Image (cartoon, rainbow, N blue to C red; front, side, top):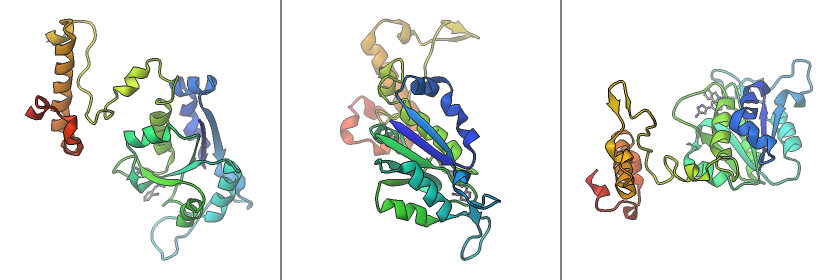
Length: 240
Ligand SMILES: N#Cc1ccccc1Cn1ccc2ccc(-c3cc(N)[nH]n3)cc21
């Protein structure tokens, strides 16, 4: 997979070259390009924003600069264009799974009050464009959202995680939150590891883990339970 990010703060994306993601890049599993939007300005002030038509607070990012930058970065290769915005569709594990199958992702990081809508509209005429939100809160720009989304996607790529099973057993992968996890020591500050996890009874352990996942999901994210298809819950599950 190739990932390109266009931003006025390239340094914000430096963490993508650290740790797991950095190793994936070094291993050739992912190619990453980070581009400074201001490289496509032509004025001495390198202006990328202007006042909003219709008035209102703040500034809007100019379409011309974005058009030149995205044309240059995209070239002729097919890609999915992703535009983080608080007004976007929710980015979920399902989104990450879908994007993990893409050859190429290009992220447009806005700042100010966002990017002129015509940028999304123009590129949507020739490629898939997703306006996505990572949560119901407002950030200052798209860079942090891109860090989140790139990590969620790249960890799903074959060869990136040491243990591929863990991605298959993610929270949300079966529609439920993950239950609690424990490791040594058996007792810590008067708190003990649940006996069942040390029993060696794999069926009992699997049942206990599912019960804790259902319990946690019912308590913290009842919306996820409501969204589960009927066949996803067996009779024992329905106790929650
Ligand atoms: N747009 C906009 C906007 C609109 C109102 C107030 C502040 C901003 C700042 N901003 C500029 C770019 C940009 C990108 C993504 C987010 C973003 C995503 C999530 N999930 N929250 N915030 C915010 C972004």
